[in-house]
Amino acid sequence: MKNIILTIAIFISVYSFSQSNNSISGKLTDTESNSVPLVFANVIIKETGAKTTTNEKGLYKFENLKEGSYTLTYNFTGYETKEINIEVVSGTSKHINLALQASTLSLDDLMLVMASVDNKTTTTKTSN
Image 1: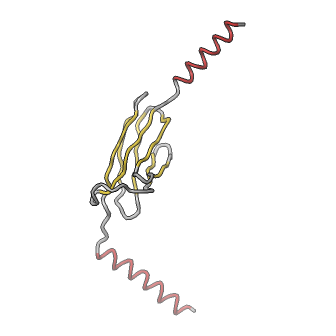
Image 2: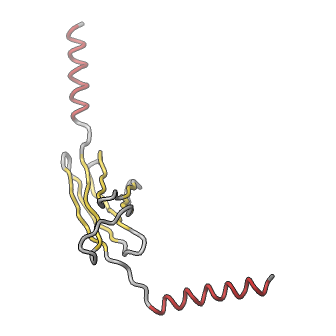
Image 3: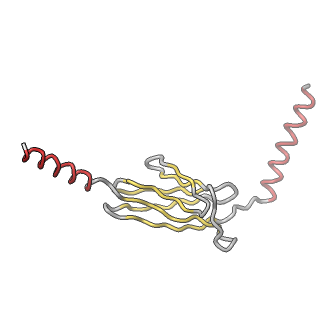
């Protein structure tokens, strides 16, 4: 009976130590503002659909990842979206710090948006 309990205890401990402890973490900042953290930015792993948001210090973390290749997508309103490919190896933690650049809206794009809004407003007024 003692041998059975000992054997079960060994299997449980081996199984629990073999669990995946791979992680990806990092910090997301603004390129133009002296590395000011981007708070509540989105970080997504494309392959798994896992999502997280950065905290008040711009930090994020994914834990218990399986070994393999992942594509991380970083986005924040008003900033350009970036994608990074990363390889997760068993028993490792990857730390990725990234700076996002504010996206620019051209004058032509702005004029198209304004014309579209103006056209919808005119159509709504005449149809009432």
